[in-house]
Length: 135
Image (tube, rainbow, N blue to C red):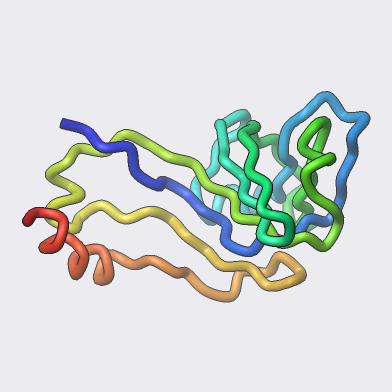
């Protein structure tokens, strides 16, 4: 059996731009994409910490090192510049990897300038959670 699990997450990303006129999507600095394993055009769930809105869209690359997080199209109506958001993608993972603690998502917390400040989830933490899941 496979379980749908968190694959990649940028926690507390800060919106730098919002462009309602763009066709749609979420622009993310490619360095940040690479850091957590987001792919261009990958589906993501975005949760806005400022207003509670949630939306699904897809990732498009923004310039490397720019630290841009850009809400485009309809998504720009659900957030504003300086809002803090959580950006998540998911994947199907073999249950055994989850139960044994060998699966871990890539999670990074960002500061207000979208600089990585902490990797939040490690393999060690995953193995501590695994015994609870197999009961």
